[in-house]
Image 1 (cartoon, one colour):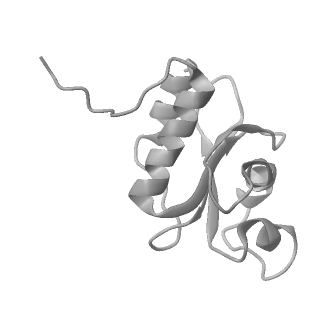
Image 2: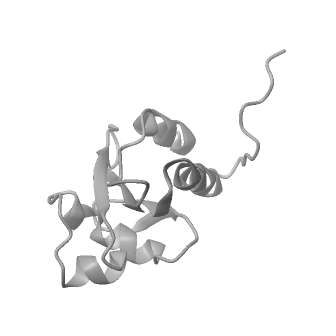
Length: 123
């Protein structure tokens, strides 16, 4: 029998997604991570020093730029740290994965789209 690879799990999609984002945060050293929709509404986020709702709100704006301006809303939300947003490929929702900070500039986690879609039950 294969040992369970996940230490923490949940049958509740939002909680499961938050747990996945916390695992990404630990693995990549992100200050925060969130998934938001195309309207900037939070689906799930991590605890930490960055407001998850605010992070989701800037996701659509952040996905159109690779640099956080030194002033303005993006800088206020990220506290001046490097941030990235990536579209989550799925057929039903316009989701973004947003990450702030990290060991270097935030890097898109391999397999994130598939994992997010599986957790949310979309494809």
